[in-house]
Image (cartoon, rainbow, N blue to C red; front, side, top):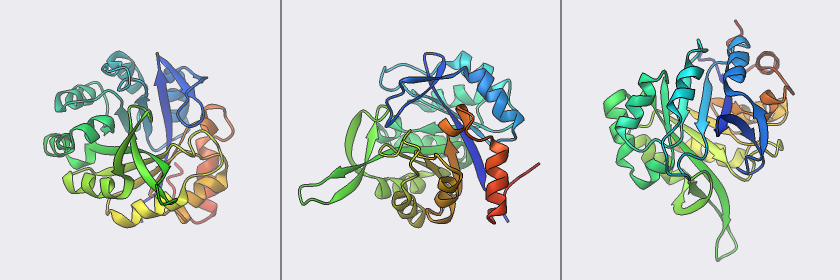
Length: 257
């Protein structure tokens, strides 16, 4: 049986890890290198590094910081933010990343997903979606995809975009709920379940994890294959080990070594 992954996330702005609510990123959470070392020692299954303002600022990712982070890790590293071309993807892989996460650039140029899958493999190509519930004219709500760090709404909807991303070669989908981000009130389980039912690749839950039960619910009710969290780890509400032991006791397969 495949184990379920616990993935701390480093949202990096100007060389520091930041946290906030609904992508505000207004609180300093620490040094990315120090946090990477902490989570490596706690046996996290992976680490995600997002340069969260690179796309909005129309610049490339800070490669030197990625390199220094990767140097401290013995676990897989996923890197995203400001990656626009296959050459950018290659550069990050050469800098030490194991997977590349694309979001804004994939929406603007969906062929980038194909380029990543064909050039580096689907296992290296992660489609990340920033999703928010948007009121419609008829009073209903739809999950719209946002770009540029949650700043720009698109006409695209989450589930069709996830399906297209997998058809183009994405090997994983990260579902970031803007509504839940930083609230510590729980993941958007309805959104997760909808995306998981639509695709046949691993789906990673992101945004809203505040308690151990929230992480369990994302896996059990949302059907996610992995959970990504930030605040609960950065501010030491729980260690990765505590999360894993709790989930293992609830019957979720975990790598505990």
